[in-house]
Length: 104
Length: 104
Image (tube, rainbow over all chains, first blue to last red; front, side, top):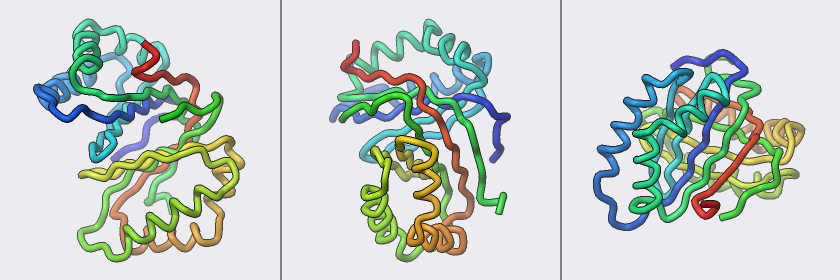
């Protein structure tokens, strides 16, 4: 796995899901594919246990704003608010430092 | 769930684990308890699927540095490097903006 060129930005998306969700996995796959083709997209980490955490990495705040306003992504966001999430939180962060296991 | 006062910092810890791990859960619980008593600690989110993601939230960079150097935490870090993680990455981030589902 690779590190990105600092400074860059991370969007930390944490969420809890409703009990019954339909079409969520399909939408997730679709949105990841779409994001990958978005200007400034660097990568994504995702893990969903009791709380879902998805962190996506971006070159600039402008790129994050453009992704938020992508028309297909807007549809997914609305569906998420209506059908899938009981709660979510979005944090826009500037990555200032980074190190890995191999750096030791 | 609550939002913290901006600006604050997030530490994004992503990792993959080795196949056989012993004592990891116990250490995780112990370290979370310890971190909660650490100056500047705000909160933590954790989800471990294929990739483990733990995000902890802190008041300042100084607080993060102090936690990294906490003697019991240092023992846990060494054990993690030796026994538990096949890879990990740590990103120190400044949270610049935040919003939640309820903000709409």
